[in-house]
Length: 149
Image (cartoon, rainbow, N blue to C red):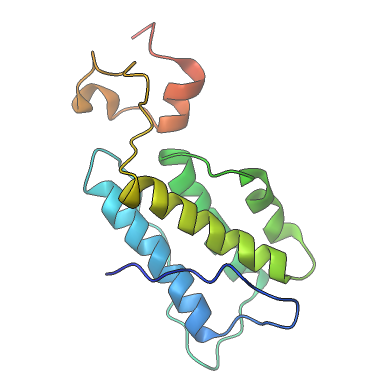
């Protein structure tokens, strides 16, 4: 599985097609696989194989958003993350939603692969082994701290 540069310049006249949906699904799969090669334990995510005849349903968009959400909850939340949570409940997907989906993926990839960030910038977790931290998701460590461990 390889990374494909997301399209982040969606216009109101653009529409999602099988190539776009496949790119989004494959990038989600790529991020999960790459993060799991390190100390992250992101559960198996559901993906769909898209064809030219496929029309995304509300459930498909919800599943894609949920997959991105799962990765973000285990790794780190992208800027404007709250917009991701609103997309599945919209009546129709617009170009800003498509830009947001792809931008979230681009940001996650950039943080992890390009910058190599593990979001332990202050070295607060250095007294713990990966095995000790494995029981926590990243957002739990940030929110609750590890002082009681």
